[in-house]
Length: 238
Image 1: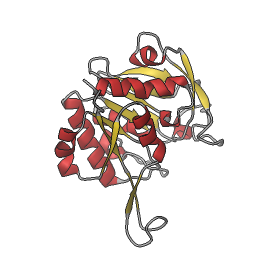
Image 2: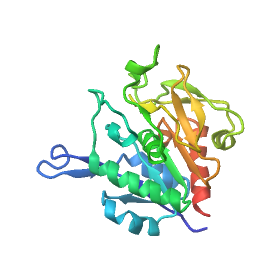
Image 3: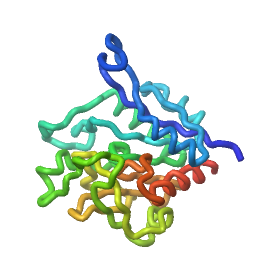
């Protein structure tokens, strides 16, 4: 069976570290490994907003990855900007273009961590800018223990795509974020919630495959994480 071609968005870093004098792209290896293990062919996407349509013509599915940055609050209509917010504007511009293009053509999209937040904004939703300031009694969503270990649990409602994929009513997940979905975009439904009420998963039941999760399933901490990638690749085969 042919391998579906899966585009993964890259992170962008300024000079220093890997390249001392020039900016550079980056992506953790386990993103690509999880796609390959599920039967997909991973392809990495540079930040060229004007070429989003050209990239999409080559792809069968899209993964919007996470990163240590935030979507500019003005993009979801916020009148204030929390002091903790840090943006990567060209990356966000590209991710909005490629995500909206994929959804318009009903190609499968999986949003991971910041990618889930980006997906919500792309479809008209809003974000919590800093969880500790907006959620009373919030968990440590930037978990102190390694990302290779769970940070907290999430509850998964029945009759959701995520429940059908994982076969679980709860999962133990890792956690590496200070923002989260606030107002869910029109047409999306919540499919995972943390014990403190923070939204951890969203999906669009009317699309072929449109799923966002706030954790990092590419670490494959559970059978549920593995099934997320398997289901995404299956949907990308058409």
